[in-house]
Image 1 (spheres, chains in turn brown, red):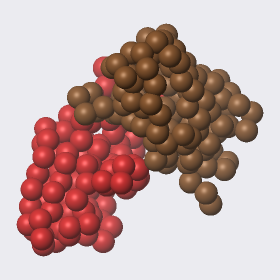
Image 2 (tube, rainbow over the protein chains, first blue to last red):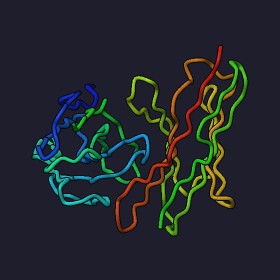
Image 3 (spheres, one colour):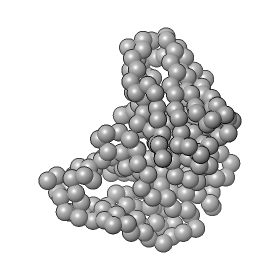
Image 4 (cartoon, chains in turn red, yellow):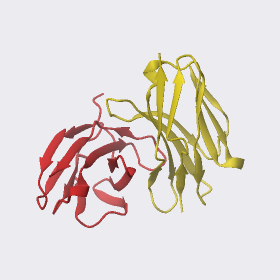
Length: 113
Length: 115
């Protein structure tokens, strides 16, 4: 069974630009969560999608948004990039979400210059 | 509010030593789940174990064992006879099925196993 895939693996953007990250969950998994990982803040929850609906959202500004498609693939968008958005963005898929183990992708390393 | 505390930022041990990683959690929910994940240098988090709040049985899997104690709100992880390949950052996480569906991760403990 293929694991969670994330594209692209690396991105370099400049301040003010926007970026879209993609995540393909494990086949059959309906829940996709996104996390931001930085050395200073650790792993911070961004949002979770389940069956195309955002089920929960972390404490991030509205510049961070996401969506999930009918095939469970998910995208995350960050608009008006700031230097502080530089981080590893991790996607995790799960059969049902909360209460179940999550399977993580390799992440997308975003660098904002 | 939910919270996970991993007070040990970094631990170094010599190969074959036993090591325990501490995890203390806070939640008001009666039904919740606890997890441990490993993040090796390659970066991809790997699921290790899941425990629900009603199951306080300790678990052993090879060199790994977990001690869940509701009385002290702790879910500690012990590696017996550590190996260099155990070097990684280990995260403890808490999830609840009541209300919101957040996953709360601890800040992680970096384990260095020296040959």
